[in-house]
Length: 151
Image (cartoon, rainbow, N blue to C red):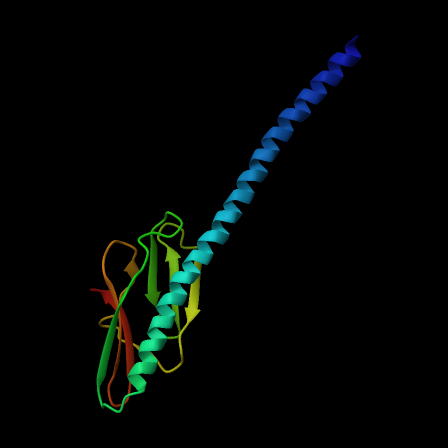
């Protein structure tokens, strides 16, 4: 009689261990899926901002005027993957970077065309909110500046 009792206890113990291990594995898979989805959504936002900056840059440089200023209002989402995010044009003018305010380890960036100089006086980090965001590009006789600010 002790053999069925011992085998029953072993099977119940193995079942309990399997339930907890599946739960841990499932939470790991769900977290990885969330990270992948969130990074893709952030990438779409950075691509949108980088494309807008590039278009403004090409428009500014296509005119013969000595000094030109162009601005565009951006339609940014208030949240990505139900989290607030920060987006900024990097100080070197080479890329647009976005990351989550509470999870800065997850960040994405999109490249900008070469030849841009970031206007440090106007450029700020934009935190997602229900506020108007403006991206701008200006050209003097020698330098092309870009910036992003609240409108």
